[in-house]
Length: 216
Image (cartoon, rainbow, N blue to C red; front, side, top):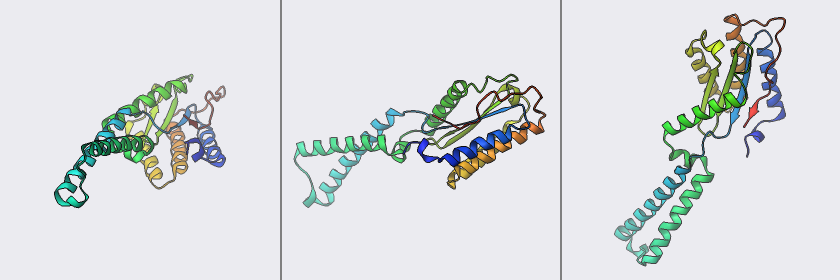
């Protein structure tokens, strides 16, 4: 199922309404972005294939040692079994996220998420506000990671612990299957933070960035 199909029209409307409400009294722009996956991690397929081949080879040895009645002695057949196991492992890794995640180090997941979030920040032009008051809430589902990136107009007056707390709240809701609830609460909290810090809406203020959820 594609990421876009996971959310109903009602879900998208709720998120859009939350952004509009949060921005109602402030001079900031809140941009929620969802991505299915931040990186391709092709090397994981090779690692899974090698691991599956090694496991098959180990099984052949164990059968030979402890269950000789089921052992395989034909060298060609042994070779084909190991190759087939490797192919199955590589293919399974390509289509089953849980398997692929097993073969990608956390440091690689973190790096890919950070790079994808920074790219989204530029692509969605979160920086393109008059007073540099854009905030992006970025969720990458495969990596199970959430990032909140504020433009310099906000980051210089809001402590990082505020964003860290917000991230934890979103993650907790995602774990309970309440993605929209978590995002909605985070969006409204962004509005509260900016209001507390004095980013009040002015008479000439305009909606510089659309309120919709971006799904990439």
